[in-house]
Image (cartoon, rainbow, N blue to C red; front, side):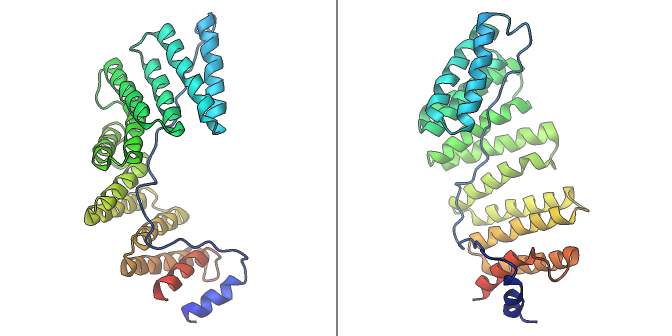
Length: 275
């Protein structure tokens, strides 16, 4: 059966299909920092400052999650003051609160202030843990990197994501899957800097990493191959995209049969490439 006939026969099973736009990739998708919360003990919350910090953390969590970033920003400022009182100005806890402050500032649009607070969080953490490669450094480094992307300072972001990946290798090994988002961000930066070969090399490394770590999981392998094919489609390398989508088609048929609805997006992408 021809490709077009196969698509026609399978489209009757769905109502709406969303198709990506070829050539639309950019560094907009980045690995970002996430909020950090202090695990307060009973002793910590016996005093007035500890109770206030617990309340501020809850309020920050709720407002940040709800997208109320201006309100989250005020709670984050309180958290920095309170953690400094409780644990000291050069403590890991202050580093965590500064990271949260940077996150709120970044979301509120104050990128320069966010970068300064992520950097302060990083320096405090390095000194408190007496290490340049501890896992606690990854979150503020990601914050600095993503803000640098937002500020169009791609060379700076590139160096920062490279450091994140290095720390990840030291702490979790060179084949850990936690680094994938950082590698993807690094690849997209290289692409926007017109380092196309390096961008493709990193995407290939991501695919091989997933393939190796997810061996035996057919659906996980399919998802990894789909991401890899989509990269080439998004960046306009249609011959490579077509080859990868053919491999993806075969993998889906082998795992789920020739009539699987999972084939639909792949066949649609192939139709667009060949149209």
